[in-house]
Image 1 (cartoon, one colour):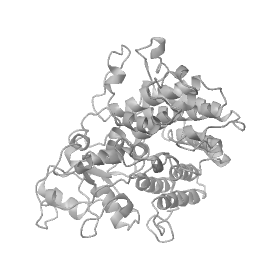
Image 2 (cartoon, rainbow, N blue to C red):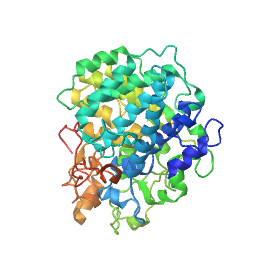
Image 3 (spheres, rainbow, N blue to C red):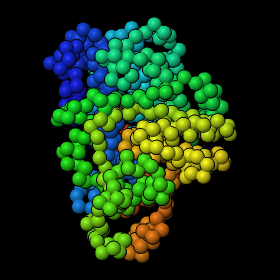
Image 4 (tube, rainbow, N blue to C red):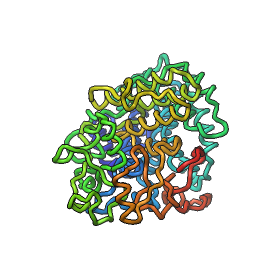
Length: 495
């Protein structure tokens, strides 16, 4: 697997990790933290790897299947997919390594802090993606437990919140972390404490549509401060221009998989219409210097949608390119500021604007683009409207900010907030096609043309379970029948 190649190449040459030893048998290693970079890479590779990287992009309507190839048709067709590679990276690899680090570290030590924070983070990604999963009985193969029961997402969230509270109650003032083993914060203990606080905020806000959500309680926590001021990422500076030593998306590009994807008209029209300066960082321009996207999932159409005399399959579309210095982001500063903006917005507190502005600016700064989009009269100016109008503004800018860096987070958050909204337009006749082209619903999602009949005109909600989770598990539930099964916290009305 790509992860194995990456992790072996990055850590195999260093004296502190002999890759001929079992990385899960820490009794053979001189220090438990030696597998920490391997666990961090496993998480990063899952987030922007084969499953979550590509599916997150197509289901967030950043990318769509190209007209002349077929690799990702199944994603635009909303066919059942399980994200099995992501699950392998997150559970057998990352979580087992993190469990081993905790078991061999002193509670309250710096390495315990990193391992527990990343474990909570990873479990949230897993349950946010699949919903009910084995949790309390998971990772117990060494105890002979091979049929772990599935736990409800509600129970899992309750435990994750209890774990993050317990971690925040510990005193790490005397803790230290060797920067040799920490690809994310280079041994900065204070940054990891801030990451943990930000993780709690994320856990709390994800439950915004559930009956137990208490925004007043979340607001009190938000006002305590202490959240990340530096994006939690695996820096692109670690990559090398060699097979197995590059950003996962660069590896996929080199293997030819980006011949299969083009820009989605959904995101392109939004960026074009609003003259968003980030467009050139997210997509390539055509030879005419314009940015062009294809209607989501419209790869089978062999006609000429725009009537310019060139068939759709022969049109020049904007593409996606990843530099080998691209980062793998776990949690961004814009993400956390968007969370804070929403908490304050739900409270009717005017401080929401400052966090919203800071979030958008952080995204602009990350891509190195000048100018502003939130100033007076600019397209992303804070609306200062109703609570729902403000939440929509936050969600729309979050959608843009996550493009090319946080795809699965974009998919998950859109399912929570239901923004961008889904427009009811459907392309079934030539008249439909002309109308959609001339009156494209800018700022709305459309149901993939190829997936129209699959989910009763709804968007995907969650992947089915990987075989690794249910095969030979006597406590398994019935397999999901489609991508339409919502996770527990996904309770807001809308598609």
